[in-house]
Image 1 (cartoon, rainbow, N blue to C red):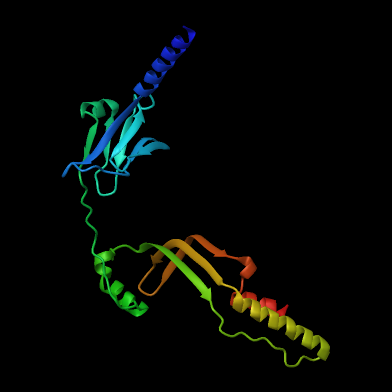
Image 2: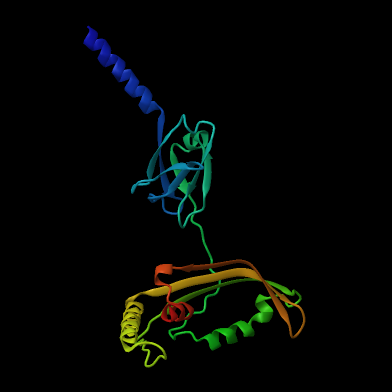
Length: 230
């Protein structure tokens, strides 16, 4: 008798847990095909993803007084409540989204800085308001150093013994090999504003500047010179 009561109690608990979940299906409005891997956002940091057949499950108690937002690449976003989902008989259709890209210039030739500047100059009047004298600028540069050969040698130094000279040249040779074998790269960028003061003068105000470098491999020309002198 006790065992039967326990089984019946467990059965009702299971039914209660399952009743809290709702399952719906996402389909394309144009052809009624399932929409897999769509994002169903239930909160700022919570949500689920539809499976390969377009199905997803939600806990109705968690979103009882909230809306869910459904999004998927190629489709328009849709926001629904639990009441809306039930009214649709748990089948939600999404409309396709048409994203028109702006014109893009494509070429099979490697771009050259002069040709890029020429095209920018050609479209200045179209892309920039000539009446403005202030422009926002973002600049980024990536620098690589690839030494095919790098030799340091002190041929002669006054008041330095030949033994010490040989020792110094050995250290310089080790430095040059270390520099050549290292992958030297650094990044720098800045964001600022350019003011055209008049026809022949301008002013650049840098709001933020960043330089990223591995100081263990800092082999810029200035750094190499400092290391060699040391």
